[in-house]
Length: 330
Ligand code: COA
Image (cartoon, protein in one colour):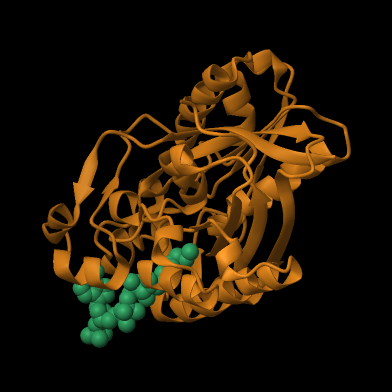
């Protein structure tokens, strides 16, 4: 028995922040941002809203599409680095807000690879026969941990995310076929949040030093991302005897257009197979892959070979190979 994605949902807030808007905050330009990253604009949530709200909106769409109730959900997993609270888990809050009273829930923190980690975890609960309906969310309110005076990071990130429903399938021709996940914690020095954890709790000093925001050494992260995302994508293709022609779509973490292009090149994919929405949303961390699903779902057909790939803080990275399980709604 395999796990298959049987419905998807996605959500971004209304408020658009363009590159031109950021020109007013930091010394940057629309031309610089677009040429280095591919990003034109990103969405930013209002104060008083949180990551759980992204998940709730996405789950509501899934319940309508599959015509099921929240009570039928067995498990909710939320991948995020911007939980509503340090504890309890955002998953607990999402299950309360959606009325998923029979679900247990927890969070996974694997930064930009979080959705792939959560998808693998959720699919195992289906494969072993324990659960019938598992919701996997990837969502981040990155604006809550961005310093809008730091041009190295504020241009990259945005808010948003989505969710998928996993259900068991006896149909051998569809479902989650394989995945390769990796981590190397020595990469933490290049991408992290300095304060707010048990190592360095919040204090006046940490606030003054803006240590509750993302710190990134962009060039180093770029080098690791470009190599590892391409390598792991090639590895999953080789392990499953897939050529570039066999693959219908690449859904890669949207961190930087140049990283995605390098991965697609290593996979020998034509441009029309590489799904891109970074220009609209920037990097939404755990949110990028479910947001691709929700934007491009109508293109997918039952049996399509899709490769998911991600790289992020940790470092964490991985690739998942799946065969799409349903035809788009007509
Ligand atoms: N606008 C204008 N100039 C900027 C800038 C901005 N927003 N940000 C940095 N610069 C400047 C730098 O200060 C540097 O100037 P210097 O040469 O005078 O020191 C110059 O532009 C080049 O900076 P550099 O960091 O080398 O640029 P880059 O080509 O590596 O692009 C990133 C920067 C962040 C876009 C790129 O490194 C990247 O995408 N890294 C990976 C990010 C990522 O994927 N993170 C998430 C992991 S999932």
